[in-house]
Length: 154
Image 1 (cartoon, rainbow, N blue to C red):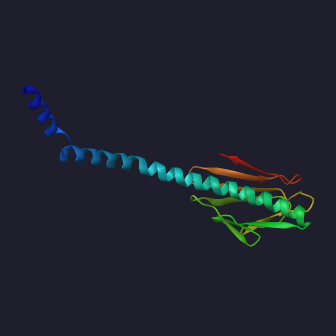
Image 2 (tube, rainbow, N blue to C red; image 1 turned 90 degrees about the horizontal axis):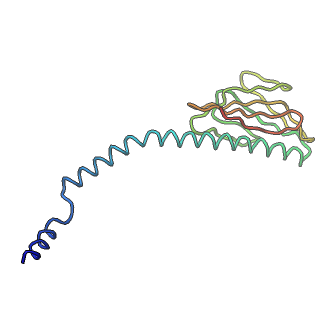
Image 3 (cartoon, rainbow, N blue to C red; image 1 turned 90 degrees about the vertical axis):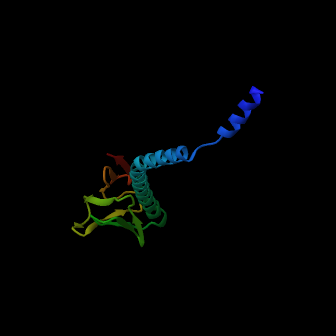
């Protein structure tokens, strides 16, 4: 008889009370508030890195197109903008990033920006494009003799 009382008591106590459920939900809400801002910053950094990689890929493609078409390919870069103009295509710099510096050696540069040229023999104007976001800096360099494009993360 005592065993049946224990079984009945266990059946009556199974499950969670409303207070226990509210406590768990409130703890989850606190954890979400703590974790959400760093996750948003992480997503911005990843979008910025992706934009830098896409810029390098677009520059490499411009070099290949110049060699394939035996024509000069030009890339326009404007400081303090969040995009780069490659031909007629606009490449946005995401994640809060902007073009902060453009350095070219052989071509004209003004406050409005500059042009990096790739030539049919694979060479290019020396170029340096610096992209900046909150806590990240990426330097995209173009070697003048080889036309190779390199990324450096800082």
